[in-house]
Image: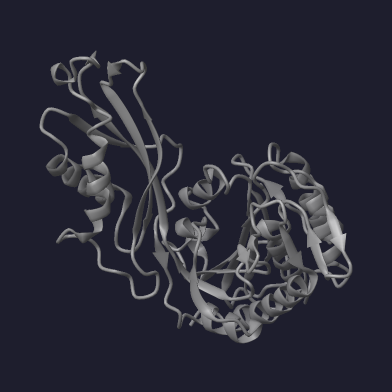
Length: 381
C-alpha cells in the first residue's frame, strides 16, 4: 500500500525552491519534516542533521519481512547565493536556486517514497544536509554500525541527470603543492632560490603525471583522469626573490585510484621534476570527511537496468562528484533525477539561470514509483 495519494511534487518543489538553504538548511529541513508528517510518515533528524524516514520493515508499516531494502538519498543544501523562485508557465519550468540541484530530484524521490506500493520490503529516505560542502551527513550515514545504508540492497541518489541513470562517476581530490626556496634581493637573483620560478617544472610535471608508467589506465566509461592547477600564490615583495610558492590542484580520479594512491604518486612525480635546491611537498585540503572518490556500479545491476527501462533514459556516467561515492562501497548505487547540470546555452546547476522542467519532475517521480514497487516486491537479485 502507498502512504498517501495526496502529495503534489510540484507544489512541494515550489515551496522548497522558495526556501533558502545556502547558509542554513534548518528552514528547508523543517519544510521536509512537516511534509512527511502531513503525509503520515514520522521523520527523525539524527545528530549529523540527516532527515531519516522509513516505510515497511522496522518502520511499523505494512512490510512483511520479505523483499528488498532500498534507500533514497539526496541533499537539501544549495550553493550561494540564493536565487528566488520563479514559476515560468510559458516554458513549463521552475527556476531558482536548488530547482535542479537538488530540490527537483528531492521532490521526485519524496513522491515515490510516499506513493510506492509497499506490501513487502523496506524503503528508507535519507536526506543529507551538506553535500555541497563536506558531506558530514553522508559520512555519518555510512559510518554508524546501525546505518541503513549498510543493509541496503540498492541506493538511488537524486541529482540532475536528465532522467538518465548514472552508474559511475569520477572522484574529486583537492590539495596544495608547496615549494620552498630562499629569499634574496632581486638585483642578485642567483644568491637566492626562486620558488615561483620552480613553478615551471611543477606545471610541466602536472602535464605528464598521467603519462607515467604506473598511471591508472583510461576508464572504459569515465575516460581519463584529469589534474588541473587552479590557484597560485607566491612572493611577498616585488623586489625580492620569493622563497615560497603554493599551487592548488584539482584531481578528478577514475577507478581504481584512491586519494592516498594519488598523493603518493604525485609526490614521487614532483620530486623527480623539481630542482634539487627547491623543497616540494603536497598536502590535501583539510576536511572532516574523506574525499568523494571515484565509484562505479555494474550497469546490469537490477536497479540500474529497471530504472533505465522505466525512465527511458540511458545508462551512463555522471559528470560531477556526489555522495554516491560513500554509498557505492556498501550497495549497488545509481544517480538519477530531473534537470541538467548544463544545457546548450551554458551552466544550469549552480548558475543564476538554474531551472528544472516540471514535466521531468513528474516523469522522474513516476519512473521511481514503478521501479520501487518492483524492487521491493521482488527483493534483491
